[in-house]
Length: 198
Image (cartoon, rainbow, N blue to C red; front, side, top):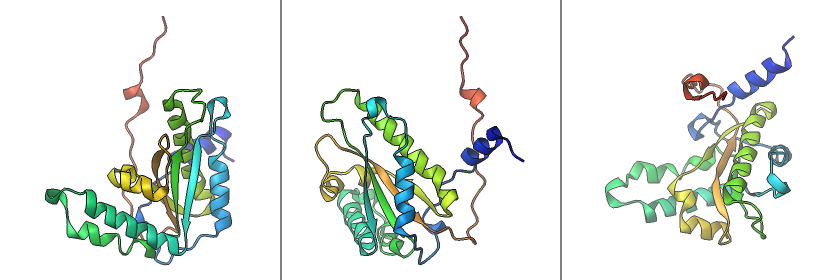
């Protein structure tokens, strides 16, 4: 029988990102599972119970539409010297392996009671709750970030307010059991820790 400490250590250390190529073609997740995932996210720490997280869920036909928008934004914002056809074309097939996409957004408290960093940290904790929940529901995915996510074009598509901040897109599907993933590694915490006793 494992102890509580062993359980939490195993759960955290087995957390992983599964990218689109590691998802099963034709992935389908019940909406009810996504709802549970987001409920778990909503139990993240939140100073003053601001609960800055906000989610926009793309499902069914909207998944293909989302990737089409990403593809167009990629074409618009990528400098010519960095543009690659294979990256542009890859967006066309992603929807075949993706069941849902959750746009994760930090919405500022209208009274701005606390620093912006606290809202961002709180939403990041909500994302970690989602990550930790994946294995329990036998699903897989990862948080996609980067230039397209933060572009003005994407802000317009998501209809974000001036103070809203896009955190990323949680791409979700079923894991492809035949996908071979490299081992996960971390630098020991001791190498990044300073103890102060006086």
